[in-house]
Length: 244
Image (cartoon, rainbow, N blue to C red; front, side, top):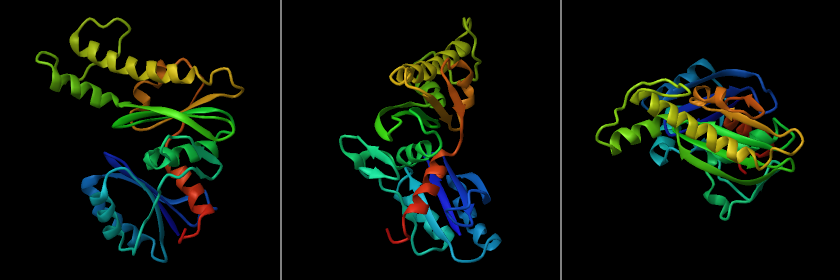
């Protein structure tokens, strides 16, 4: 069995496969950092040899806790490289690209054969350009919707951290904050998409926990798709030996 793990800044997402060539999940789920110990229950529900392949942007402490909870000798944590699984990393220093973005780009390339903008909306929002040939051309990182709202509350004396709603012409402060943050997300994504908009079959692949909050504002070809990081890890696990 192969366990795929996406350790993000807020949540740990996971998917258990019989092997890398079997796309149907035996089990899958998500949990917060305070629930990492619950990963150990997977070994009870699914006993047997286990290979673990993961992406981690949450730090070494989280990585160590995951390894301990699963009671495995090691987790194969993804390290971005210049080239893998048909995707070429054009970052100035390829190893500085986030492992989650690298895995998502690989997942996107094996999901959509044409140019695409790979967007993941979570604690942060990333928007990465991928050519039809598999070249990662570059991308954006910006605060996610909730982080934008929280920063306004922290950095100003009179703007509250409160639940607002999106309206085209906000007429109260909480709606103005919510609408502004959602417009910022949608505007950044649409501006990035312009760079590939004229290419045949160009598409925005949109995922992440906050994606639904602004997906309806996007005026670009769009496909909602979650867990591209796990999809990419499955591709990587199928092409690399446990000792790679």
